[in-house]
Length: 227
Image 1 (tube, rainbow, N blue to C red):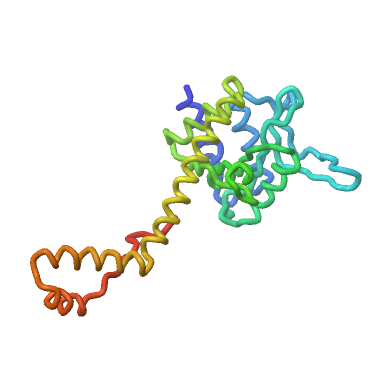
Image 2: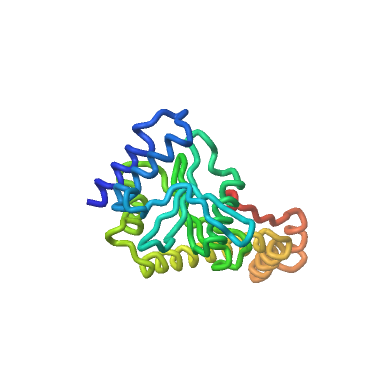
C-alpha cells in the first residue's frame, strides 16, 4: 500500500509535470500529494498561505502548514522543480517558519524532498538536514516518508524516534569528520613513521634504519572528499 502511495506521489510531483512548471502550479501538486497521504485541504488540515500574526507587527505566510484539530504539526516550503534546493536561503526561510511556529521539523519540497530538524536538537544555531528523498519509484526512503507522514499513521512518537535516529547518525558523521581531519595531521604521519622505525629496528641496526627512513616521508591522505 505504501509502495503504491509513494509511486503515485512520484508521478504527481515529478513524472506528470514539465520541468518548467511554475511554483504556483507545483504548489497545487504538493497539496494533491498530501491529500494522497490522507490530509484534507477541504477540512483545513492542509492550510495554504495562512497569514499568521506574530506579535504586534510581524506576520508570516508559510506555503503550507499541516494541521490536526487546528494544531500545527509541521510546515512545508515549496519551490518549483527547476530551482536548485542547495540554495541556503530556502533552508533559512523554512528554518525561520519552524522557529516562529515552534515546530521541531519542517519539509522543503522541489525537485526532491528534504526534511529538516530544528538546529537546537543537534547543538547548532540553524536547522539540520535529516533526509533527502529523490522522486524514484519504490525508493525505500520514500516508503518511509509515507509511513511517517500519512495522516492515518501520523504520530509524534514515531516522528521523534525517526528524528533521534537521524540525529545520532548526524553526530556520528560529524565525529568521523573530526577524526579524519585529525588523522591527516603531521602528528599522525610522524607516529606512523615512528611505528615503522620500531618495526625495522627489530631486524636492522639503528644506523641502517635511520639512513633508510631519511629518504621517506609518510603522508596520510583522504581517499574521498569529506561529507
